[in-house]
Image 1 (cartoon, chains in turn red, orange):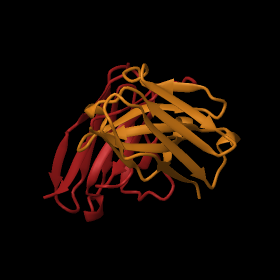
Image 2 (tube, one colour; image 1 turned 90 degrees about the horizontal axis):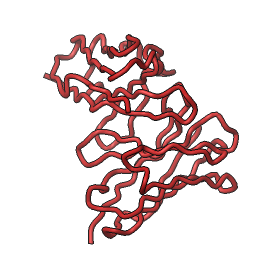
Image 3 (cartoon, helix red, strand yellow; image 1 turned 30 degrees about the vertical axis):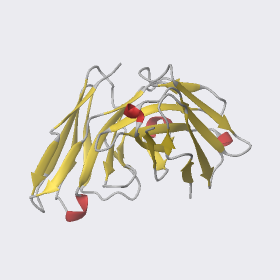
Image 4 (cartoon, helix red, strand yellow; image 1 turned 60 degrees about the vertical axis):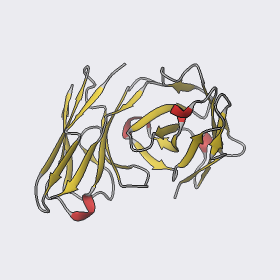
Length: 110
Length: 119
């Protein structure tokens, strides 16, 4: 099974800061990676699909990049409403393939 | 607007079977194009994909849970269901049903339902 290692597990940043989260796959997953935001007590929300595509309605301060085994998620200017836990998620592009989440990164305001 | 709603007991006794149903509105399961998923989250922990089903009945199960999981679909009711057998306290979690767009991520989620395993 493919393992997803996300780092850091938590971070604290100031409003307006650039925030970067990384996700590493245990093997090449091409661009088969999505990013989600989860606020306390809520279901996750899709932000980025296929490594770099912004989901409709998601603010442009969120972005993703990478391919193969190394991926990056960036918030260009952290806002108070961005306080949440962020998860990467890989998928196998074959029919009925597995899906795996990273361990999550909790983002807090300094 | 697609909506998903989980239903089922919030308390299950150890060794029994956890059963949840997800009712989909605003879209038809049988129209194809999506995997209908169950995902859980242990208290204060990360997300774990339990498995998913296609409208035809084809399934994928997480290998770590495969021996205990059954996911089924009832297209006439626009519902899909989860059964997890022989539960223990380690199965206490919030269970989400969700719609997976194959290559494009999970775009719709239920609100989640907390299932506690306790005698």
